[in-house]
Image 1 (cartoon, each protein chain N blue to C red):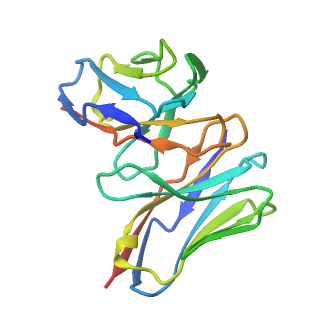
Image 2 (cartoon, one colour; image 1 turned 60 degrees about the vertical axis):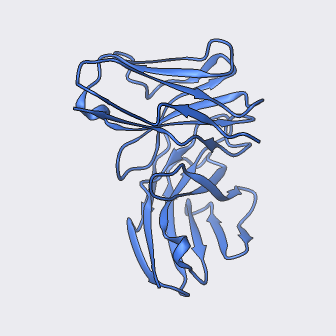
Image 3 (tube, rainbow over the protein chains, first blue to last red; image 1 turned 90 degrees about the horizontal axis):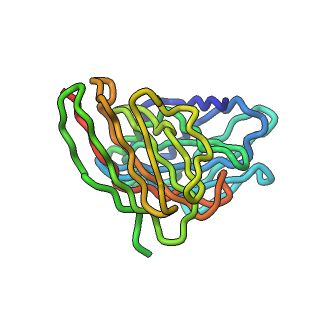
Length: 111
Length: 115
């Protein structure tokens, strides 16, 4: 089955700096890669996703890049704000199969 | 649109007792998932339904866990008997299609504590 590794497990940045979270996956047939944000005690919420036919996708201050050859994808958050503080999960799946999640990254943005 | 509804929000039971969780997905969503999220870890899929049929239950501990979605809408997840290691948040999610063609929408989860 699919295995998703996520790094780092914790990340602390100053407000205004950029944050990068990296994930690697094992199943070369995986073709869908979403990122979820989970605030303390709340549900995971989709913030951005990318499919394997695209190398990069942006949405305001967040972007995701995908390297299919190396089987890794990354989340980039620019101009971080205190409200970006949360746990971020990457995930991967192939068509027809379930999402496999990474272990999560706790992002702390210091004002 | 209304979100995924789950109940109860919290449940505390003793080991060897049984417990049931309920989920009502977003209206019209054919696919329903149950995930287990242990503190500090990512969600782990337990079971996936497509309408009222099971698509994948390979990670469901079938000796103690069971789930059903009889009419293809809401679903229940049961644990009997519970063990200490079952303490976790149980998340229900739904999507309009299977396998990543549409995003997953999560409920608020049920936090289970087994003592």
